[in-house]
Length: 385
Ligand SMILES: [Zn+2]
Image (tube, rainbow, N blue to C red; front, side, top):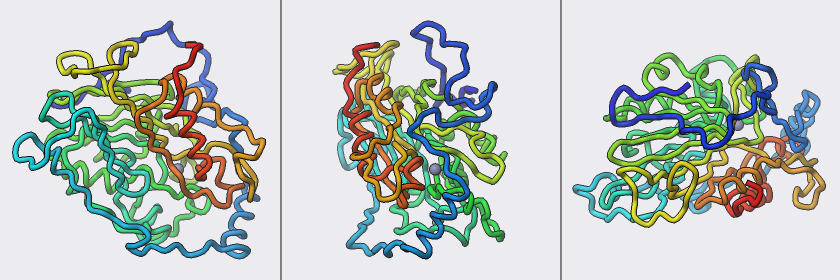
């Protein structure tokens, strides 16, 4: 499940257990005994049916087609990111900020995250979250939703990346002349595992490839060239792995629950897990930083970030405002917030939430995202732990 990179630049290890051995009972999100099929184990999730799908198709195509979205530069400005100030300690024209998290939104759910530098004048660990640089959210190069705005930069413009986190296996863009039947059966058109982007990243990276962190059983979706090219770690919910980028720093990656599903085709629904993720900067050892204020089992913890991935919060009916409804909310987000005592930064999705009755089980609306932010990022440590 965990592999260390052959090169010495990056290594990944499992943390020492800090609490009693986990229960041998099957986790509640496993739908079978061997952890190869999963489900959402909460009343906040509702499984949509083919009848729901037909209703949704009628609504968005005939009854109430959505208004066209303006994609002019004035309404959605796109800025080319400037990564130069943290590219290296030599030749950089701008100082590297101390003790600051740097997050650059690159469209879709994709962020480039740079943890605070632990050594003055050096960069921090860089993590690419759900990298998507393709034009369409579809298994086809020619059919399917096209991105509203052009990419803010190319894969080849990115600085050296240490790790990639994937939230789940939804569509990549595979060149194909066939109509993507699976896209009709799969309501989530958000790309989170974009094979062409990962291929370009592998070719672009001059040093050893970034380490790939994925939810349990996601590896099958990669072509053999990427399985050979990347070192990978697959994690179950509440499981962690420690990334050590030698000479740069350490970070603990933990897969956490989210309310979603997976499928790349018609026959692999929920055979891979989906996840949100925490990233914790680890300040122990020879790369310790001055001024660590937070303490956690196993060492000092610096910056804490929560990445929501692709997720819903509750299940409501069309036209229903989730705040006012009696619909149960997913309890996992409060659990995450209480376990971590809040986060310094939350990257929380909003999108593909209309029609609400169909989309709310798997995608956040704006009110869902705000409530999720309060549950996770603004939480305080649990008094029960
Ligand atoms: Zn998705």
